[in-house]
Image 1 (cartoon, helix red, strand yellow):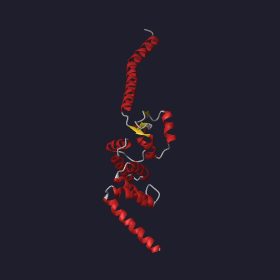
Image 2 (spheres, one colour; image 1 turned 90 degrees about the vertical axis):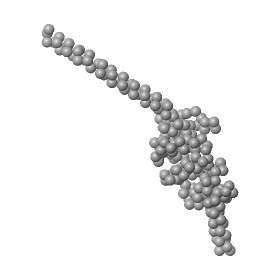
Image 3 (spheres, helix red, strand yellow; image 1 turned 45 degrees about the vertical axis):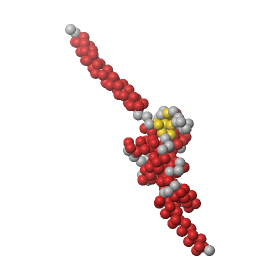
Image 4 (cartoon, one colour; image 1 turned 60 degrees about the vertical axis):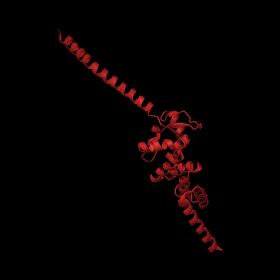
Length: 203
């Protein structure tokens, strides 16, 4: 066999042996993409855009743009007509680490559970995110949840997560006290005593 013919034959034989390996790698890559797509599709936890805005500090315009870019999945609105997106797509933008249990609590809060909203508010306060914490406390307080009312009053008294406002603090404390919250009652008594003392001193 001529030398040139042997060289061509050897090249073809070597290429034939390598082709299945390359095909296998392509198949594995394609399969991996399919698996990732399926996992991403199945792992969907709806959360309202309003809640995402409060937790991340990013504007609605930002999230709508990310939806248009395909970076965030837009989901069906909830029963109240609120626009929702996938929590998995935005959790990295929330400036605190959420455990699986925290995420369950967050979903319950977003669905309107007052106790979960109050607990989520405390969670964000503990994480050093008072403005996000106030958002959840306000939702719970507006539903008449006494613990949230008392905590929200604390925000207005201290100026943490809200501007200092003694009138707003008294309003929420009074509402909580009227619902039997013991700490709120004691705080109301102390505040009234302080107001009386200041007015008496001023007179």
